Image 1 (tube, each protein chain N blue to C red):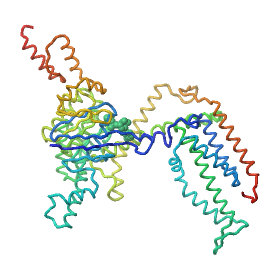
Image 2 (tube, rainbow over the protein chains, first blue to last red; image 1 turned 90 degrees about the vertical axis):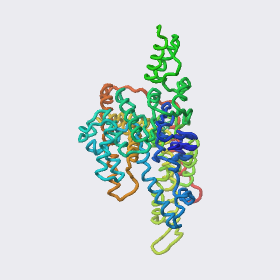
Image 3 (spheres, rainbow over the protein chains, first blue to last red; image 1 turned 60 degrees about the vertical axis):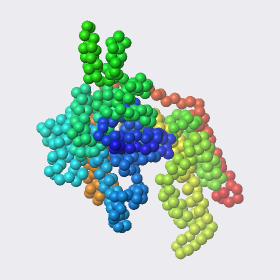
Image 4 (cartoon, each protein chain N blue to C red; image 1 turned 60 degrees about the horizontal axis):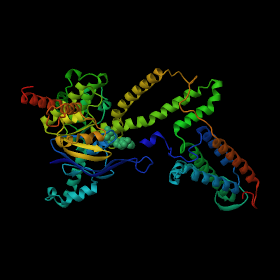
Length: 317
Length: 273
Ligand SMILES: Nc1ncnc2c1ncn2[C@@H]1O[C@H](COP(=O)(O)OP(=O)(O)O)[C@@H](O)[C@H]1O
Ligand SMILES: [Mg+2]
């Protein structure tokens, strides 16, 4: 099932000025429900631009974006025209029908950013409240939830990302970089989005910080069944955590597929300015030395299993 | 957004683009003088020919140039109305109650419009459209450097302006990023009453100020680490050098000014023509 679908999406910056630039060109893409989709590509390939289009922060210059089959860039008129054909409103009298459709339009757009939660690049710059707890509560409060529900969500989101409750009354500006990042992530998770979109969530963090962030994202997916989109330029992280991978290259989609399918083209990816995971390089070196490693290896875990298999198989060594 | 770094700068390699920024500042001043020298229709014709020549030489799309005139539209309208109704002359064309329109008034209004538009077009061509703001500040600093003898901190002012200009696009980008981040958390900037809208600015202004201060501290540290201590004895990476064409251009424009003075003396029949 497609959760999000982009159809022939083109996006241009500074249209009509000498600086006009195409950041996305005729991109057609499906994001599958309940999966973790990784978007990789070199810097400037249009990843961040695409993320802005997924929750309606910006509209494509051309083309359409659909969430669960509903077009998020439809004008009121288009929406109305489509609604009049829709089975859902069939039984209503004409006047009420129009009203109901327009109400759904308004609700859809109001809830869009809560349904598709976007964690921007370096999200710690969005923190502003006096305390950590208040900052995490900002999104849920904008949703109009009850205080009780808000408190529940703040706790839940903090638990997902590993923000300890001792920090709740601290100022977000007094935290370390990694802690700030996790608070900012919690602020979006607290809205319980059906789709969680993260733009370079681990950029600038130390290895442990990176793992923590990715693991809380996987945890969130496993517990809620949400759809996840992660942007990164690190093949290593993508290999570890993603089900599906989309490769962006110069404003276009260069490859889409299951992780294994895409990573089988590791050399081509390197040609697009992406780093091959260290462990893959090691495996290639070992292969060259005559070690019978069969499957392509992209994570340390896979390497361990392959090496153990070799060790057990060739017992005489 | 990238456009903002450069203000109205229109990238290009035209002969005007290649002039030295100091020369262009002088040329801009001369252009202003020239447009005030004109007094007769004939000299205005010469001035407009000069404007046309500059437009063609600079290679800037006329559409962009017209945009430069938009802000003064109101002033143009206002001054021409004042000129039309307030000028007293010999040749009364129209009279109604307290309103008198004289021929001289119409001419004055026309001259005023021509003067202001050519003044703006020429200075924009010399300065804003073909010179980056940074080059302009550099040029200004050098031109004003004799004032250092009078203990006027020319370098410091120039540095302040340069830094401010350098950070305008950065701050704008940052504002946009923070606005997007808060919109993603459900802030709505465009609906609601005045109080609600003002309140919705808080989540933007606080992170913006925090990062602006951090940036300022970082910059100050970085400058200190590189031993910046004001303009005294500082050498430059990009040294401005006049070339022959700079002098030629300045001399030509002075020539045009002198020509205009003589053109004013020429009369064809009427006193204004
Ligand atoms: N606000 C902007 N204004 C103008 N151009 C932009 C802006 N943001 C990004 N771009 C340009 O669009 C292209 C894609 O950028 P982006 O989507 O940020 O790439 P990525 O996230 O993959 O690094 C780049 O060439 C970039 O220079
Ligand atoms: Mg990016």
